[in-house]
Length: 173
Image (cartoon, rainbow, N blue to C red; front, side, top):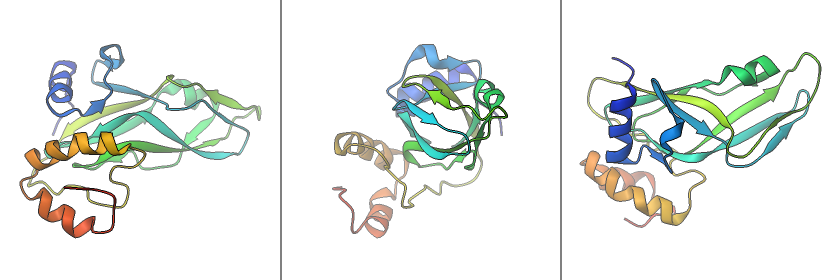
């Protein structure tokens, strides 16, 4: 297991749309920096979910690991959710936050602000794609349809799994 470097990550993004839309300037040495979709202000002790601007897809041989930019931790922003994105997941990420600033001031995160580091880590063993209720979260129908062929390509049994898990959704295979 290992963290992908910038060159391998760029190749993965280009081949599988692991980050969409993709901005080369947001690649750092060993990951991609996700941004926020909408400006959000959190008041002291307030809990909110922040949604990433980017759609994230984690291919079969990888998991993604998230870490907050230290700038926000220093302000007192605490992240409550798990820091892993399962292989096969496609969607915008919901980042659960609470403002615990010592001086009890509000914290504002602006649209497009660099917010969260995402590293792709190789995994071993057969693919077990994420097919839970948050698959395709916060995506448009057009974005969802863009990823179906990619999922079908990288997960040979995707259509079978999708029929089982998404019987009652808006998806059209």
